[in-house]
Structures are given as C-alpha cells and as structure tokens.
Amino acid sequence: DAGVIQSPRHEVTEMGQEVTLRCKPISGHDYLFWYRQTMMQGLELLVYFNNKAVMDDSGMPKDRFSAKMPNASFSTLKIQPSEPRDSAVYFCASSLDPQPQHFGDGTRLSIL
Amino acid sequence: QKEVEQNSGPLSVPEGAIASLNCTYSDRGSQSFFWYRQYSGKSPELIMFIYSNGDKEDGRFTAQLNKASQYVSLLIRDSQPSDSATYLCAVSTDKLIFGTGTRLQVFP
Image 1: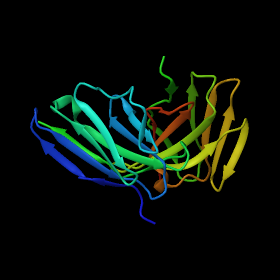
Image 2: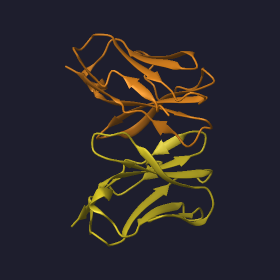
Image 3: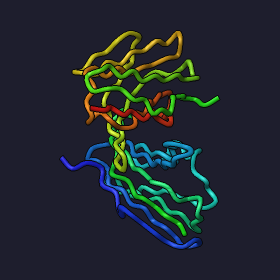
C-alpha cells in the first residue's frame, strides 16, 4: 500500500519567495495533519483537516501560512512570504481516526 | 511547563540491555498515548500505543501507563544497535502533542 506522499523532498529558496508543499494522504484516511519539526521546538502541529474541513489551525502563523485540502487525496501548505525562521522539516500525516497517524517522508525546507 | 516532557538524552545502553524511556504529561484529560521512533533524517514511525493504565507488551517493547502520576514509559528489552534512534512520546486529548524526544544509543 502506498503511504503518505509528500513533495518536494527538499526545497531551497530565498527569503520572500512563495513556497508550496504538497501531500497525498493514504487512500481512505479522513484526517490529514501538517507538522513542522525543528531541533529547538520538536514536532509541532500546524493544522489538521477532517473530511477536508479545517478542524484546528491554532498552531499555524496565519499571516504567512495557508493550508488547503481541495479534495480527499490532496493538500497543500503554502508559505508567502517565506522567512529564514521557516526553515524546518515539514511532515504530513494521515489517519482513519484521529490516532494513530502515519507520516510521510517530509519536506526539508531551507529559506536563505 | 511543557505539555509533554521527555529527557533529551542521549541515553546510552549496551547491546542486550533494557532501555527505559520516560515521559510525563500535564493534561489529566489525556486519553491516548503513543510512542514513535524516528531515525535520523527519517519520519516518525509508530511503534506502540496504550490507552489504559498498566502494561502493554509487543515483542521486545513494553509500554507502561500510570494516569494518576501522569507518566508513560517505554521499555525496550534486548536492545540492539538498530534501536538507536530518537523516541517521541505523544499524548492525545483533542489533538496529538509530541515531546521533543529522547535519543537512544545502543552500543555493541
């Protein structure tokens, strides 16, 4: 079975540019989560969806981040404008119930 | 106070020994508890979950939960060098909150 698929795997861009991260959840999973992981903060939940609707985005800086799930098999996380402090590994995870979650391989983002 | 606390380590144990990883949490309403393993440069991988007080065993892994003390632990018996990784404790109420992880090193 295909797991959670994220793209790109690596992204390097300059400060101020728009960044778009993509995620395809496991087929049939109703929940989709976006996390950010840094050495200092660990794994932080940014936003999660249930049946394509945003359930909680309290962890997401809303001035520059936006998340969408236009259909059950695709989600995006956009950062505009990007800043060096956004450099991190971004994980997408999906699940049938809220738990347990299955993680994608992550996108390693570097903002110069 | 962080919601989920773990000792960052590293915890170093010899091959064949028991590794004991500990986690405390602050929300008494927490219902579900998970242990994820994360190898360097990889994504977190679920290895154990526990919902009720007591012990739950799966192969070499045992998860222990004490809700009164707000404490959850993971024991790894017969530790192998391949167990060397960061172990993330995660606690769920309405959403999953992760600790920052404990790095385990198993040396031959």
